[in-house]
Length: 339
Image 1: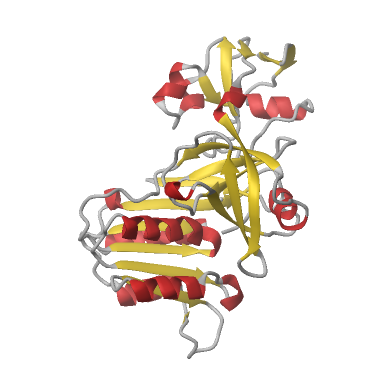
Image 2 (image 1 turned 30 degrees about the horizontal axis):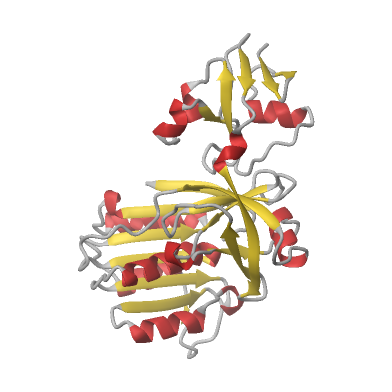
């Protein structure tokens, strides 16, 4: 039986049990979200003992060199002893809630102001940690020059973080942020290249940021932004995006719903069908796909078959948190909101 030392106390691990599951099973509150080795909210550092290579998959080389690992993916060899350092908090930047604004009936625009430098690329995601250690991952919709971090959070029944943000949190509340992670962001170059951006729910958050980032960088090629929802209530920022498109002739915004009435400037029907109709031959384009994992994976395949190179498809599928019953290069990570 292997064991792990956490805060000067040893805890046994069951055969094939991860460090995260073992600590949680024994009542130790450890920040975590996806439990799938992606969101990185369960990062720990080994002070002594061997860390399995799989437990460091996807981490930056600088973190690997300092013996950081993902607790959810770390399954020590039988009989191994792993002593944890207590300084993982060095990766977590203190921040305060600056504003909470409803964008729709169940989507909240959350703005945070970091109290220390926090470098990121618009469209990446971060882990938001509440004072009690509760952690969830959200995409960043803001631009670094704006000085605040903007997140779009959808309220789900029973959602721990989303429920707190919607009902209890107030401007000035202290939180922490960790990250960023993810490869879904705009890279300058080839300014004439057409861009296709498609997402569902709060998958709009990174796309909204990427569009603004590309426009500020002087992108001259067409930008096609598709946002899908089940019905019009699931759409948000509609007028803001229409105004943005009116100011930039190369931006084309197409909201879409599965259920709704025609004649309101909103497409009614499947999002993938709309994309196929408007952009039938995206050869040489670059694509950004965010939101519902089934749709993201389906669109990724269809765009590839339509001639888009896989290296030009950047996908971020959102999964619900693994710590609740409802549970958000392709990046898949967990969030407290199904987007």
